[in-house]
Length: 325
Ligand SMILES: [Mn+2]
Image (cartoon, rainbow, N blue to C red; front, top):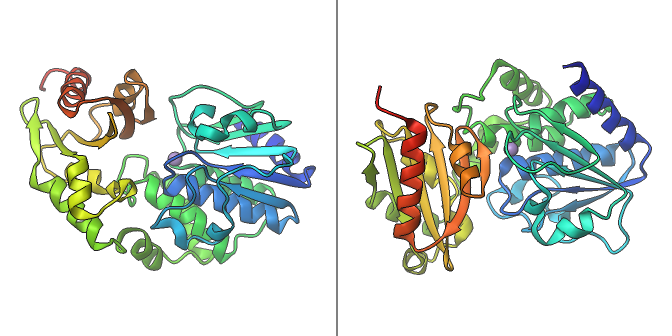
């Protein structure tokens, strides 16, 4: 615990002596990636720093309501700042096209909570016991002496809300809730944020969810519940790739599902998202297939076709689940 504290203090010191910084998140960003990136960026600005908000895939809805999202760029500035802080990223590769230039920044700091991945950055603060990077950043913002305001709190609360599965996964600890409570006290509005994140679906998204739920299948004696979306589904509904967000949680809602799987056709590849009720560590499955994540929420991209990806996922998940109790 002491060394984690020391690492955080080192990061705070580095921030204090840098006039400018880039804050970056990973490709296909989720609520934790964007909320953390934007919340930290605001805190640095409150300290008078010049901040570059960088997300290789921009800010897809529903997260474009977050304060500061309009200032987000897809690339690093021409003149690299002396400091790059990379959040929620379990490897430099997850920055995609930005990985190479980020590696050229003088000071690269990683703030993450994945137990998987490939280490990078001279200064690393990785705490898998943290519910979200947003929770770690709440501690950092406090250490920097920046008061929480409504905007910062909204970003960091969104990070924690989404990475805990709306406060439902096993990472919904007392510590996570205490931090969330502090953010609410500072002005984050739980009802408004919930509606922005979860109740602003387009008709196309709702139709895509319908397609996924209309063809659930099971494997491993019902312990694995799966669905798949093909390019034809996207064409028929008018939905796009980011519209799959949240569908996996609806699949996990099936009572007997120890593990929920959503397979999404993307070109010749298949994106495989997994959610576990707690018995199986799906991060291990994802890692075996070249991806990563958390014990209860993980993903990977594998070679197609769908049927092959489905078989492969089922085999590894069944092994991870082990024999029926
Ligand atoms: Mn995260």
